[in-house]
Image (cartoon, rainbow, N blue to C red):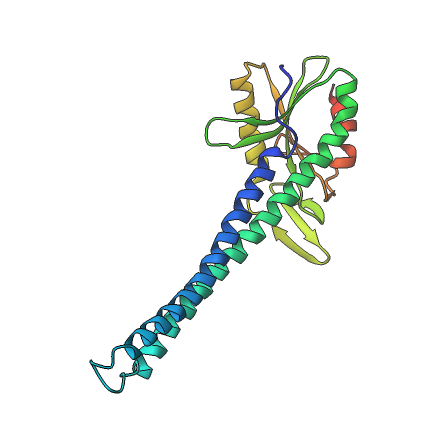
Length: 233
């Protein structure tokens, strides 16, 4: 497997940057929506005052019209601000994901020194996005590792993964097990491999799954990833 030209977390860092740019644009647009109409009204008012021939007393804009205009401005500006906040939060989550990938990549350096081939951010077909890490052991066993940066205790009901924070239990936004299986099949196809073992690795969470394997997918926390890979060969 050729050495990857991508760094761990590179793609998701770029995604975070793009989201921040869009968020800043939304905030700037909100400011423009507020400032531009005010400047326009002042310009119109000054223009009317300079036309004494039309009327000795310039007619002011009706209060109802001004109120309606200000209401529209407030609604438009609020919508843009909310969009900016939403994008900024998504950028923060992307940065957190990138940090998780970088932390796991740091763990993988030990295996690279021992002859493992490691590739980061492999672009996958089938609308599957990127595979965070694809690695092949010296025994030619292949693995795809999907890195997750969620915090808390990672638990299961025997079918799905859940996140436990204190006494509260939350479902994940996606089916990580199904996603990892699809990635493994796609990597197998793209690289013409005999078999690819799927792994979901949590960079910040503590995995509380006794067997360490669920629905044919290994689930592991960062501190035990290298141990798992070595034990599997």
